Image (cartoon, rainbow, N blue to C red; front, side):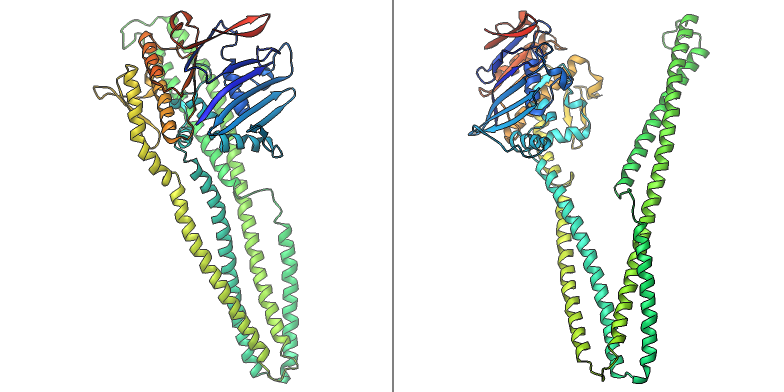
Length: 567
């Protein structure tokens, strides 16, 4: 469990040189209030910046520096995980990024990106997306789980269930499989080469036994002819290798195809919009009354509607022309890339073919040369033949072992895919997740049957079995769903002890779309949280929420700087 102890910041946004320190684990609930611009949400931006290098809200990094002092921005976060005490310090002007464990700073020799990965993957086991699903629920720049893409939903749940390691293992295994396939190709080539050498050597031994001294001239002529062929093939390979110089890579072709697919998708969307607007224009030009309400459509309304539609059509057509140009360019790049890869593959095949011919010719030359001055002595040739058989057996053994390892690795790879072990773990937890979501929805007086499937898509049914989607609900209803999901993720994290944390920040959640009943129900949920939870409620509703929490922090603006008052 991550237990956040405190956060301290200075010269961060509206805070000045005097550090603002907030204890994060002292009270079960803390109300944070203040006027607009007083700095209520600054603590959340500071926490996000310290841990992930970027604030909670969409604020550029240079804008985080206090506009009056313009330097020495610094944020320090203290937390513990088990028996280890951690401190993260991050600053701007000068730039600073330090990770401390038990009063000892961790090695900073690695690149800052790797240092950040160390913090997220090895210490926090929490990334920026998961942070905003488990720790923070707010109205500012918060993307609820239901509005994430399926890939991002999967990433959040994998972090919660602590199964992201399987993804990393799969990546390592893919590299191993690639190397194994390369080794298999190499050993297969060597096996074929040894077989060809054995065939030549066996032929050579037969020829030694029946060689005629009168054939030496004929042999020399054959040697000269073979050497001429070898020299020509070597020159040809040198020329072919010069043609192999290219900037095109194998992985470029799938990237080109992906871009084509995306552009074609956009084209379909634009065409669909154009058709819709054409139909709307046709309606206003051909109809005098509304078929729904039977009211007469005035000329002003028709003219205004047609003008607006024409404007949209003009913009869409301009965009469509631009998109068609991009599609044409993408098609040309794909064709060019494909053609270049085919050319490179053909050249590589030609080089391999020539190399095989060279090797065979050289073996043949050595065989013919050995015939000179030998009185039908085959002992050396037969020893060479034995060596060739030994090499063949060795390569065959390696080939069989590599194939066995590949078979095992591909089987493991299947288990590590999204549809393998991870899918089974997720499937095991889905009933628990769905049960918790619906329990929290009931507490929030939202009586629907909510279900997330293995593809992380939602199914929502009413008591009357009517089907809904998340987007079909009002903002207040969506807010209830978001709250239910957030508390569910925290419960799952606590069960798995993966991304479990004491800290929960509700940023203006009470000020958003929740009605009076929603506020009361949310307070009920907060009351049920265990004593290890520390919840911060950032709100404008001082009159409604005052006195309902164990602690209160008040931010106010004094001489253009944020000041903290604890009460």
